Every structure is written in structure tokens, then in C-alpha cells.
Image 1 (tube, rainbow over the protein chains, first blue to last red):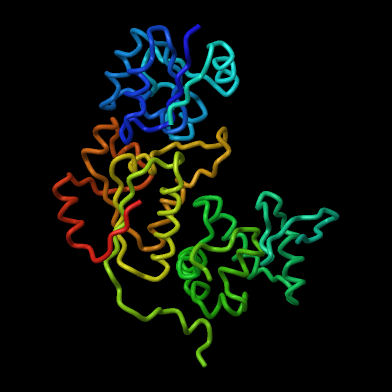
Image 2 (image 1 turned 180 degrees about the horizontal axis):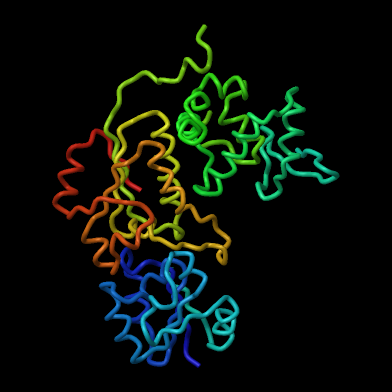
Length: 102
Length: 110
Length: 131
């Protein structure tokens, strides 16, 4: 299994998501956490970029961070998978290693 | 530091404010008032209950000016003034009443 | 000596303060710190204007529920600002739109201004604090 990349910065404020996507090989997964979850919602200026990335990557988003920010699953872009903390742990064990982009 | 309420030990900070507002019960206010050498009347409870509701809604303890105005709106002009509130809570209505109500010290209250 | 209740009105000049909020609510401490400073300044009866722009617009997003992340949800406190006579709340139109949000998504009534109007508003202030 390739790598799991976690992104915890807002895509509107930092280039972290872009950097992670540029360095993720095909088949690598992205997990959006903390302010990184702002990339997961429909109707934003980054939504198309995220949708395009789905062609090469599974993209996950951490549910508790979504609800904390006043969003819900129906705001999340189709094709992304919402996971809870248990799901987060499963991903970490499922993929060979984790790259935490800060 | 701690206070004893109904057989339970509740943690308070160095100024006597309850560490965990979820541990509050009416008895907390009664005991804190007794330690200050006073007894709570219905008039005190009116303010304490108002503060609990205010905190529930806004998640902060109001500054004294805001409290005074809000009390006036809710309970009438004769109660919505500093003199009335200071007579009830001589250590300062926001500070003392908030403490009895189990709330944190109001922001900006020194 | 004045009684405590006679000491109500604080003397001193009233200045125009603007607080510029540009950060999302929970990733950093800026939003909460700003809110606390605003409440303190309002207690001293200054002329306060709040601006929400960039990720700062997320601070006042409705329906925040932080139970699962174990952090205090301070979004209800923005609704207390009116009681503190802080009634000048501005949101930058461009910031709102690029995040797919509208004023219906916000916990408080705000005035929406575009970037140029906001720049003008900033010029009118005496003190600007950016968070």
C-alpha cells in the first residue's frame, strides 16, 4: 500500500494541500483533518481541484472536524469519504506509512 | 482548593470560582454565600438564575454593564441598575453573582 | 468617596477600533483571542467594528458542534456582542463567496461589503488589530 498523506491546513490560507497532492503518487490517499477539512466542501473555489484529485487518490475527511466547523456530510464533495476517529486509526494501519504535512 | 457540597468535594480556583461549571447545583451558591457571611434571598436567586441562563445561551459570563442592562430588560428598570445589584452583591454583581452561579469570572473583569 | 455603582461611566476618549478576523475558529487560537479582546474593549465602551474576512468568515458559521473534538464551541458568544453594543459587523463579500457561503450560513446579522468598501472602512479607523 502506498502512503497516507494528512493535511491539516486550510486550502485558502496555505499551499499545504497543493504540496501534498503534488507529492502523492497515484494510489496514495489523502486525509483531511483540522482546518484541512475546509477543502472537502462543495461550492468553494478549491472544490474542482479536489474533485480532480479523486481520479488518482482516495480522499478521506475527518467527521468530527467537519461538524465542529458547522458543516455536515451533505456539504462534502461527492466521492470523498467521511471517517471518524476509529476510521482514522484504521487508515493509519492500512497504509504503509503516514506523511503528516504541516 | 475545594469546597464541600452535599458530601461532594468540588474543585475551585484560587479566587473561589468553580473549576467545572457542570458540577454546579443550587447548594453551591448557598454555601459560597454563607462563606461570605450572607444568606441568599429570592432577589439573589433571580440574578443567579439569570446568569446561568445567559451563560447557557452565550457561553460567557457578561460584563457588569451588560448584565445590568440585560437584567433591566428582563426583570424591570428598578432591578436593572447598578445600585440594586451592588446592594445584593456588594463584592461586585458580575464577580460575586457569577461565582455563586458557578460561572467563570467575566471577561474584562479585573 | 464614590460608591461602586457611581463609578459606572468610564472616563476617557472613545476611539474607533477595528478588529480584523482572518483565521478559522479552531485550528489556531487567534479567533478566540480576538473575541476575548473585543469583549474587553467593549466593556470599556470603545467604538468597535468587527471584520470577518478570509477564513475568518468561518468563525461565525452556523451549526458548529465541537463535542467530538473536545474544544469549547465559542460561536454562540458572537450573538452576545449586540448586548455589548458591538453592532458593526462586516463580512467581506469575496471571502464569503469563494467559500460557497451566504449570510444565511452565519450566526449573527452582518453587513456584507466588497473588498474596496472594506479598504475604505479600514482607512476610517484609529486603531486596527489584526488576528
